[in-house]
Image 1 (spheres, rainbow, N blue to C red):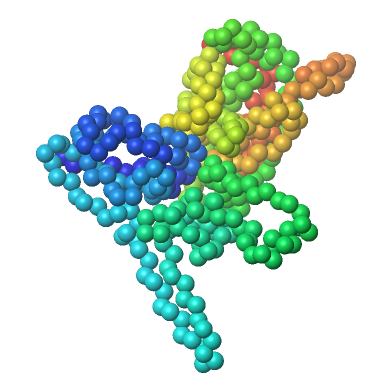
Image 2 (image 1 turned 45 degrees about the vertical axis):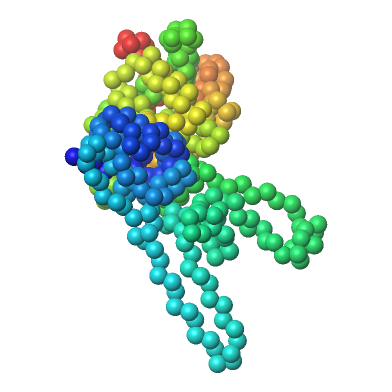
Length: 400
């Protein structure tokens, strides 16, 4: 039986993927779920697994390293050794553009310049629009002069005329920093979030005295105390079970209440922000959460994640305390309805119940909420439980 090979949706917002390399050659035998290709998604590099056991056949012309492939487009087949597979047209050929009709000269007989049609993919056109580059000025290095993403990104928007060169000394020197795919998509999604979701934020300060004591006593596999982020994941996950509107998504005009608690944790990398997911975090102890976070940090060094690592999140935590940030408002990761922003722990004056003053380690917690999914009262109740559980955390030891 002939089975199609195509790039499937590896992240929640993925529309296309760039081939990094084939891991097997055409004509070689592969097992089902064996990695056959590395694909750069909108967030990281992931492995594409074989959908069946058989022989890799009929790799489509143009499906080579560097090619941008739309999600769902067939690029090869897995078949038995004696099976014939369809011959697919080269990538992009079925979407060839019709050359524009030449413009009619004006009666003044002024010469009219007719530009040849631009050969490129929809993904490259989108990148060119974002960078403000006229594709008619770019020289294509792909097959038959097709413009690739590398051609667009290497094109200089600063001009090449001699007049520009002569006047360069009078212009402030600049350096153009281009966005990679992770940064570009993150920006697009945050812009979408701000434009489409009515967001508001609530902030409380938590006394971390007891949580820090507990943190030191809960050692991980290396003998060190678990991180504050581990405690936050555990605390938030349990609180989410009691506040379903905080563990929800706003989709298609309705609120989708998730039964599973999958907590995304924002991790900063040189390539941009990545949000891997701790699945069923409410059912895991601090040691399990710590191991998963450590594994994700190691994966972030190479930006190589599996599909499951980056999809299915129902709530997000962004902790910038380790960078010296006191407090901040995070932008919701759509379609989720909430995100928790965490600041650093600061020794601050603290009034005790008997009205005496002392110094306590205090941490800010700012919850940003999509008002369509949850109002201010519900948001305040959820944040109050997170604060209460952090300030009285002995239950965490009992649940481990």
